[in-house]
Length: 188
Length: 188
Image (cartoon, rainbow over all chains, first blue to last red; front, side, top):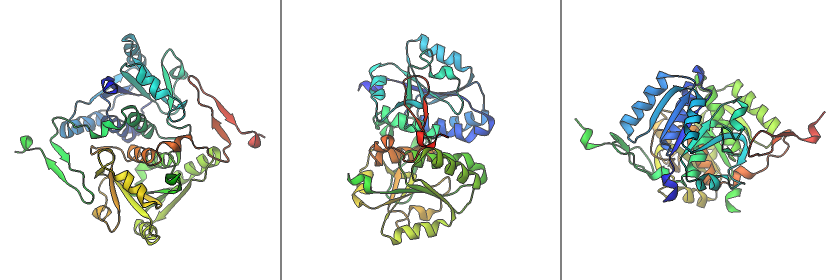
């Protein structure tokens, strides 16, 4: 299906040391909802990298986590390939009332999704950086939930049923209680 | 429309002082995505209350924020009314591959959504507390994104186009740049 061929990578901007948990949540959201990887720009945080690498090692899939790259370089590299840049911002086109998701899909290009925080550089809004500015509602919100709804809609919900290959552990969904299985090939 | 008549209230469990930003994000997500209010159980945090009250005062709507109530009381009160309790957990029924959302809608009752954190009491999973255990994918995730996707799907996306009454400020969505208007009746 066409939409499946568009890779999505998340660019996280504006991370400060006190944001460790929030940025970890953004990365887990990116992975669980179908993104291929995340780039933490203009900052490094070994704690987050370790958490995410451990999740990937246990729960499978191919998600990558890179950090320390300046945002300008990451965006330039993406644009030089001719791919699409989306900036998630409360000021952008409303994902519900506009056709912005359809227009992003129609580019058929891979998508770099910029997830900022407060006070992003004003250049993020310009067409020299972002092809699309997308708002998940125009109310104060969380960058984490905003990314979640964007990905869920972009992938038409199908990301939530995909299998993560190479997982050591796996949850079996249940109406009540918990069931976790350890994959046989990893059992000692 | 039927779905509109079901009120959703979020119950946030497991908040610790270091979670201030995360719990604020959960509350903003609840408000932006159509919940009527949030109860922070078994903890109090004046900082979060102030942030949320300020958002409601500036951006409108009727969202309430209560805190300090023991979770057992909040759940008991809800169940005594005969309303529905949903627990968001990675171990629950997958929102994409099961019909759980349709079954919750079919109750036609108001919905209390329990958003935990790690290590919730095992009773949360039992039918004495939760009518439904719902997973937004069965991968490690963020409670914030999980709530966002649940609400977006429960309200069929319509929550993102609703107007927040009594707002002092309002964003006008734009393809590029920012536009904020101050409502005339609040101008000095």
